[in-house]
Amino acid sequence: MSELLFTGADWSYDTIQRVHDAVSDIALGELGLDVYPNQIEVITSEQMLDAYASTGMPIFYQHWSFGKNFTQQELLYRKGMQGLAYEIVINSNPCISYIMEGNSATMQTLVIAHAAFGHNHFFKNNGTFRAFTDASGILDYLKFAKAYIARCEEKNGVAAVERIIDAAHALQSHGVHRSPRRRAMDLRTEEARQIRRREHQEQMFNELWSTLPPPTGARGAAPPDEAARILGLPEENLLFFLERNAPRLAQWQREVLRIVRLTSQYLYPQRLTKVMNEGTATYVHYRIMQRLHETGQINDGSYFEFLSSHTNVVMQPGFDHPGYSGFNPYALGFAMMRDIERICLDPTEEDRVWAPDIAGTGDPMAALRDIWANYRDESFIAQYLSPRLMREMRMFNITDDPAEKELVVSAIHDERGYRRVRRALSKRYDAAHSDPMIEVVSVDLLGDRRLILEHKVIGGRLLAAQDARKVLQHVADLWGYEVELREIDSAGGQGLAEHRARPAEPLAA
Image (cartoon, rainbow, N blue to C red; front, top):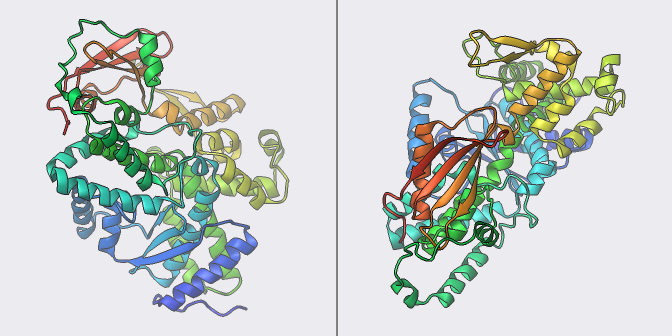
């Protein structure tokens, strides 16, 4: 029997080191995980609240919205209306894990296994993260971004910088490339590139251009095909388009748009892999805590404390429960990982039909490591959600047609129903289906410079008119001229709605 890592709830930094080493032995030696070097930092509850408010990043630029979020979160926490996460983990190299100083020794062990090894392995090996992020460069880039925006506030005033950040934040969900670019994200050299961009602009600047009269439209518009070719339209990344092409923005304003765009792009994979990411980390911590107990490194009391916390994390309320708000990603992800383990070790004939590539292989960790590397939520669910798990979680599909008075249960537990449930659930995690597809499709370069956007409407789901107008106003302020948003049915091509906005006060320097 091994010596206990700790006794009781108290811990010291030596305890944390022993725990980390013991967890590492199991994670790397037995589970075959591959992780970035770990950096574990112990923080207070107030520091955890501060990390909540600024998207969890260790270094971030200042903005009033972060202070507002901090105040709201702190009020709820102090009143006992919400708890705090036991940890926050940063997708960086080294991987930074924040752990709460108020955690017990058992909970510190759990969160190190969950974050420093579960999430860490997923960050390093998942194809979506590898395609979209630069873990080695993000910390240096955040330092540059914070310093750059602070300099902008000193030179141009806090109010002017806040206006541009407000507009960029309103558009940040439409400020990402949904497909990986041919050139991988490289954040380490971003500060040097920013300096080169500024020097190039200074060399090309000529005061005479500012004396030209504004366009009157007399020359007519450029041919649509030519304008599209020049500007690379259609373009789905609105911040990218505005950063490159907005006529009236100063260079520092373009750089601020770029900062918001690149940080949004960096966080984008987390939206695509919530179920897999949390499912992986939860499965890893479950396996590690089991092994620590089996090998005598934690006692029964610690193991029961772990099981109590773990059970709360993976609890899935029923559809008729007052607390139901959809699938708990921890619950669904963990259940699918355990189900894949079962299929590898003890498959049924049904499993062999539905998952022939992994059924009976006898090596669940090899199967899971391959899945963690090559899938994201919608493809993972479409491929590996089994009929048995659908039955255990009592899944069914409901069709809610606004034209009908009653809901229709359109899929139950039969072969056709299983496929329909799996397809419907997979679609809910597909960003292409859940996020509005809005693209820049045209601009009158030589006329009134009006910008045309299109929203491809899927299933008749129009944008909320009031929200659309508010966000479109930010686009108009950044562009500096009139902007029109057309909502087009993706199937039939007919126009369904239109929204327009003129710049209230252009954001030009």
